[in-house]
Amino acid sequence: MVVTVKVIGDERGDWAVLQVSGELDLVTSPVLRQHVHEAVAEGRHSLVLDLSDVMFCDSSGVGVLIAARRLIRSCQGSLRLILPAQGAADGSHVNRVLGALGVRRLFEVYPDVAAAVAEDAGPLSA
Image: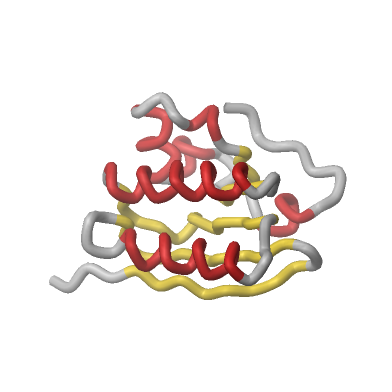
């Protein structure tokens, strides 16, 4: 079995959107890290990571998310995550992992890209 991750970049107004699918682990998480660094290097400091199609995330994946948050904050930017509207109840593996590790509260989480890029958007509760 080959473990893969796919990252597709898009833009929505002032927001760079990275749609991530597959698995985030020790082998694949550097791919996401590279995409985040490229977006920041291009001057994109408002970033949405759509993780709704991520089936598995280990501590390496969580480390990339935390590092992305730190990088974006150092640029006075904003990072928003997309997880299914019901979070863990809806089967979001990433949401369960973030919650289990106690770091879910560090992130602004939205149910979809439209909600995340809306001017008056408010995150889902932790």
